[in-house]
Image (cartoon, rainbow over all chains, first blue to last red):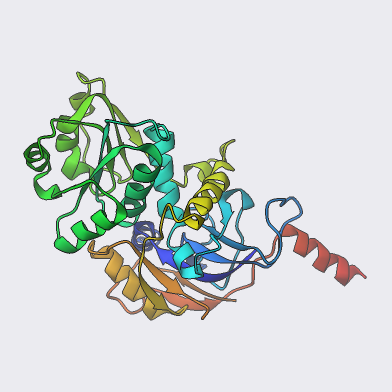
Amino acid sequence: MVKIHAVSVNPVDYKVRKNAAKNNELDEPKILGWDAAGVVEAVGSEVSNFKVGDEVYYSGEYKRPGCNAEFQLIDSRIAGHKPSNFSFEEAAAMPLTAITAWEAIFDRLRLQKNGENNKKLLIIGGAGGVGSIGIQIAKKLTNIEVIATASREETSNWCKEMGADLIVNHHDLENEIKKANIENVDYILNFFDTDMHWDAMANLIKPQGHICSIVENKNPLDLNKLKNKSAAFHWEFMFTRSLFKTEDMISQHKILEELRLLFEEGSLKTTINKTFEGLDTQVFREVHELQESGKSIGKNVIKFIS
Amino acid sequence: MKAIGITKSLPVDDKNCFISFETEKPMPEAKIFWLKFMRFL
């Protein structure tokens, strides 16, 4: 059981808010929130990797009560020790996006650590929460060239700060890539809009390349566009392991611990952008509004305890 | 404990889209066992 000091907000929060009680009023209030940092207050009898007083960070489980509360029960297999050089706010910004980016890069696209020289990765939606840490992880750990998309000066600068080698505008993606004298890319990570970029992704992917998306499509996707290229399409959903209680569920604890070391040695940095304060309904409204606008850069964090 | 939640799916511009409420503090099973044990004593 964790006493929560800070949480951050992700697109999943407003998607659940908008859909969980669309047709009926819930008997019991549903607690949202899937990114937190805090201090362990009590542990279950089978927990061996944490003790009371440990500072932790985690995302949590899709089907269990979320972290927008003073306390939360969390499965120790999906939590990690908070980076010691991070405040609770800086740590709360990271778990969901960092696990998503890590799983997309290493478990779905199967990039090799230090083994992707002379290859190119296109990240669509570079300035969002997942894009911001995805650029950093890919650059620091795989040696790949990262092309990120952004459409405003502010978001382009943010992507450069995260380490992207090249920034292109996603409004005219194929032409932007061609203008940069790039014919195709080995890998694509889509963190923005799958329907909007499907044709461009199919045209830009190299034969035998891999595409991974985290955004569900609204219309049917024409998978045949990938057939002649023998290109692969993958989904990434960071709640899969906890949702299905997969045998490798503890790998998210390991990912968070590996990330902790990278944060502590300064190889990766927090993607926190704005901090709000208070376990308060109006604060959550304000942050959800910002998140829903699609103009949010990096992560928005809410601090509960000063 | 205090928590923020929803009972209806409302747009963000509705000031009631979130509710603040009090609920029981969650407990890991070890703590529940000891509380029961203490009560038994």
